[in-house]
Length: 302
Ligand SMILES: Nc1ncnc2c1ncn2[C@@H]1O[C@H](COP(=O)(O)OP(=O)(O)O)[C@@H](O)[C@H]1O
Ligand SMILES: CC(=O)N[C@@H](CCC(=O)OP(=O)(O)O)C(=O)O
Image (cartoon, rainbow, N blue to C red; front, top):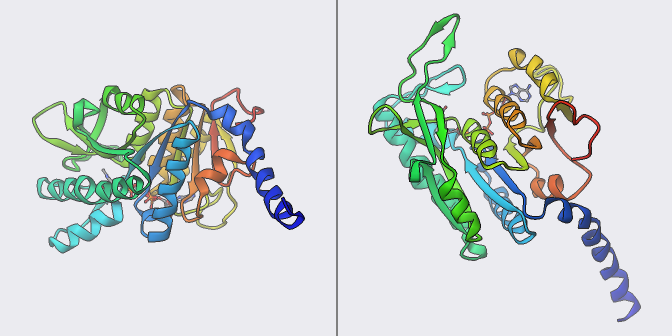
C-alpha cells in the first residue's frame, strides 16, 4: 500500500475499531425505534434513517421500527374537510377520521418506510397492531380537569402479542409497525399514539433500547424558555418532571418511563433532524439526546 493510501485508509480503520465495544455490547439485542411524523418530512433524512436501521440490522442488532405520522394524518384530514383537534395531546378521532388515520398510517407512511428499507435488500415487513393481535386496546377516555373526556376511537393498550414480530426477527426481517390497535370491545380498530405504542412494544419484547426520534434535540429542561437539554435522568427523576411537561413530549416521556420501569435498559429521545443520529447514539460515546435509565443505573455506561 502506498504511503498516501495508508494515510487515508488508517483513520477509517480507526473509526471502525472504535465501534467494536459497542458492537459487542449490542450484539443480538432488540432496539425499538420510533420514527416521528415531524422527523419524517425531509426526504434525505428519511433515506439516512433507512440506512441507519439497515446498518443496525447488519451489525447484529434486531431493530423494530414503530412509526407515527401526525402531520401526514392532519394533512389528509384537511383534504377530507375534517378539522384536526387534540385533547390531552391525543387526536380526537371520529369514525370518519379513523378511516383516514388507518389509510395514512398503514397505506402511506408505513409503505414508504418499508420501500426505503427494502432498497437495501428483502428486509422490511410492514404490519399494524391489528395483525396477529400485536396490539389490543380498549377505549381511552383521558381525564381532563378532573373529568373523563370522550375523544372517539383512541385506544388505551391492554395487551401486546409479540409473536408476529418475534417470528419476523427470527427470520432476519425488520418489522415496521403502524400504531393502530385491534379493539378488545368490538370488531373495529383504535388510533394509538405512536410513542405509546413503541414503548409498550419495547417493554413486551424485552428490548435493550427504546429510541424515540423527534424534531427537537431531546428533553429541554425549561421548554420553551431555554434549549438546555437534559442529557441523562433516572426513572424517578423523570416521574417528578412529568406533570410539568406539555404537548408532544408527554406521550414520549411517559413512554420512556413505562419502558425503563418494565425491563428496557435505556430509553432515549434523540434529534431525528440530525442525519445518522441513530448510529451516533448506538455506536459512539457522544450520545446526542436525552437518556432515561432505571433507578439504580445512574452511574452505569449505556
Ligand atoms: N420539555 C420539552 N422539551 C422538548 N420539546 C418539548 C418539550 N415540551 C414540549 N415539547 C414539544 O414537543 C414536540 C415534540 O413532540 P411531537 O410534535 O409530538 O413530535 P413527533 O412528531 O416527533 O412525535 C417538540 O417539537 C416541542 O414543540
Ligand atoms: C391518538 C393519536 O394522537 N394518534 C396519533 C397517531 C400518529 C402519531 O402518533 O404520530 P406522531 O408520532 O408523528 O405524532 C395521531 O393521530 O396523530
